[in-house]
Image 1 (cartoon, rainbow, N blue to C red):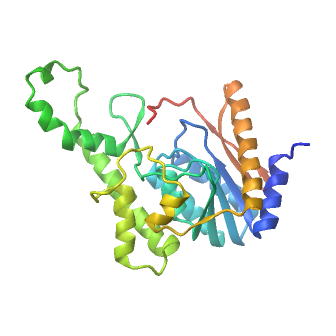
Image 2: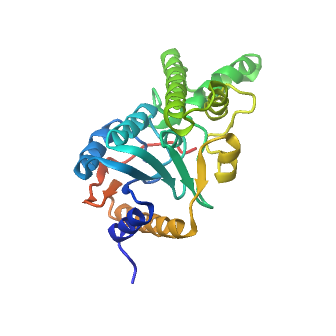
Image 3: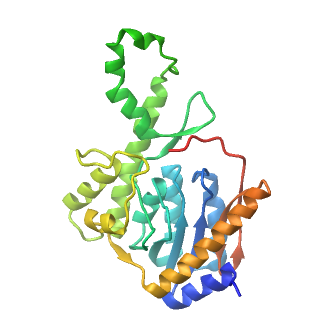
Length: 280
């Protein structure tokens, strides 16, 4: 008989001697500021504990919200371990850096930290680095091509470009704070800067693509405090992840968009509006 998510969650808690907080985002749904209050209400019901395991699945979103979500969780525990069953990209990778340790499996992946920002004229979210890359690398080239004036380009808003730069700079600062205080605590400032430069940009060897796959081996080579899940723990986490994916499919079929938030006290899903997004 297939076990429900609460039963699996409790088994993980027993095995890892922790409390588990699951935060599972549907594809296309961004981490947003409004999620912080709901997460706070949920974790508050669990109360103070020595260790929290955050089971995280998300393609990213707002870096400010990601930072606040981790700081909320850290208010309730002495140790935070971030468990990645599958994707934790962009702002979700930033969240992972706020863990004292990251646990990954064969299909787990992190990614470059590239916060999503709202497009100034279209109802979509776009990666901030994509906007800057176009400005910095292509505008000059296009200005030298006679036929470029005929291209149907969306007008460039200087304020939006500045906002994208600020979003990336904020993500960089958050990453440095998390690495210094938690994931790379005690490591040199040089090592921390090297990791941040690779993840956020600023290094010739920085990851270019928003969707670049940083698996466990690459994460360890990068220098993060990452460990491979034991076979028993990974088996439980993977079953829990598949259960959540099944629940998200049912919600989608019912035209309901919800972020799954679950602890041993039960589920407190965050209800979302229909997204209007660009996918990268």
